[in-house]
Amino acid sequence: MRRGLPSRGFYRLRVNAMANRITHFEIYGEATQRLAEFYHRVFGWHVEQMEAVDYWRINTGSDEASSLNGGLTYRALPDLNGWMVYVQVPVLDETVELIKSLGGSVIRPKTAVPKAAWVTIVADPAKNIFGVWQADPTAFPLPEPD
Image 1 (cartoon, rainbow, N blue to C red):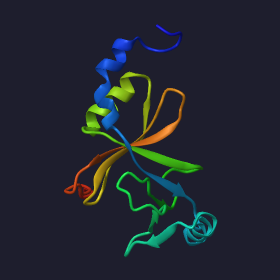
Image 2: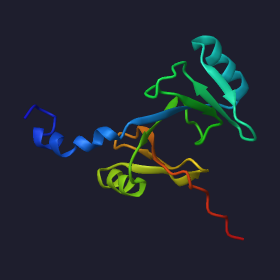
Image 3: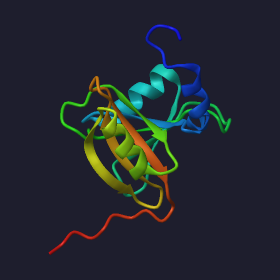
C-alpha cells in the first residue's frame, strides 16, 4: 500500500463511484447581469437569463454531451465566493449520510430544484464546500406550513 492512499481493494469496491460525475458549476454574485457580461466577454460563453427566475444558464461552447456547463445566480450562502461544483449521485439521502459519517457536514439541507433535482450543499472534513445532486424531474418544494 502506498503511503496515504487506501489499499487497492478500496478501489475495486468503489468502481461504481465513477458514475458520480460532476454535473455542472454555479457562479455566485450580486450583480448577475454584470457577471453574465463578464464571462461572455472573457471566455465567449453563451450566457442567457432564464424566464421568470433570477438564474442565468451558461453554455461553455461545446455541444458535446460530456461538456461541463453551468449557471450564474445570487449567492446561495453569505460570503460564498468562487464557483461551486455539483456531483450527481444515485441516492442523495444515502450520500449525505455517508458524507456525515466520514467527517463531512451539511451546509444547506436538501432542497428541490423544481422539476430538475434534489440538492444538498455539503462540506468535506477540510471544510471544502460542494453540492450533491440527485436528478428528479418530479422534484418540487414542499409547501411552507401556515
